Amino acid sequence: MASVSEAKSLVLDRITHRFASGTMAVSDINLDVKGGEIIALLGPSGCGKTTLLRIIAGFIGQSEGRVIIGNNVVDALPPNRRAVGIVFQNYALFPHLSINENVGYGLAARGVGQAARNAEAQRLLDMVQLGQFGERLPRQLSGGQQQRVALARALAIKPSILLLDEPFAALDKNLRLDMQIEVKRLQRMAGITTLIVTHDQEEALSMADRVAVLSHGHLEQFGTPSEIYDQPQTLFVNTFVGTANKMKGVVLATDASNVRVGLEAGGEIIARAPKTVRASDEVTVCLRPEHLTFVSDGSGFAGEIGMALPLGATVVHEIKAKDGSSIKISQARTGGTPLREAGTPVRVAPLAPGLATVFPQ
Image (cartoon, rainbow, N blue to C red; front, top):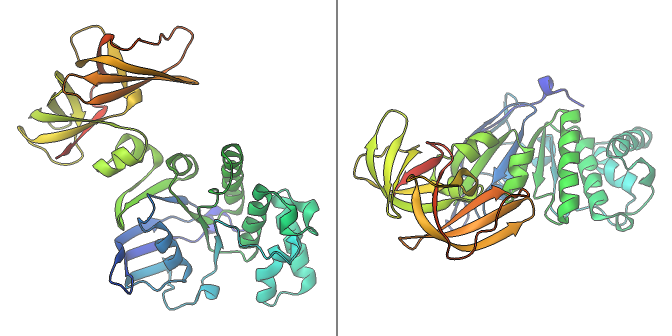
């Protein structure tokens, strides 16, 4: 397998695609992926994630733009000449072939002799910890095992780029986490540039080196998981990735780094503004539940407890603000964390200035 230093880069240069009906699937997408990175394409259903994956693989010819793997523009190449491996959501294993034959299928199609492909298939099955199952049929394996076989088959052709299309969607929660860890381990071992399509934000943030957030065919933001979560550049990213309370307010003043906002719910707040706002602008303020705390001074805003929800390691309180908005606050649930009763008056404020984010209305 290639080392990370040898892994191929991937560039999507102004990729646009329209379906025959005229519907815009993706519009002016630019991504520069470094060799050996794991990139997550994250977004809701219909945002263009799978369309981009199919364009990279060569199953769809884009309307505009270029796909560059390494130093080569591959737009004119058919799928079997792009050195791209793909793992589908349903694994797409051949039910009548043994596991060993499934893994070696791509090598057989490339004219590799039986002895050589059997040896390579065995090596890869050992790597995915299924070396003893080579003679079984797919139906004799669990879902997680079948997924590892599909991954081994994709790696057998020594792809320059590995594409994973919602690979964990069919797995239960505990197995999904195990497979996320396993796939990331195998990707690091193989040193292959990898793109994973997902609508699961936790999956994207935990697995990827960088995340591309898509909405309605447009790239909203491309950055590290920390940048996406802590420094969202659009209202969509702020509300789609993680949980965010939304409140209305008016900009009172601005400086080089932060803005001061008067909230409709009462009180003032210091926030960051990724987009330009000016004094008197009406804005939407986004506050993550874990960035809020109860206070006893006059800071923040007032409300009353609507409901308390103990959720394992955390407790979530819903707060009714005086403007009618519903705000959630999340705290670690230690032995001394009280569950506040409905109707209890409280004041809530951010843990620190600048944790809230404001966007123009």
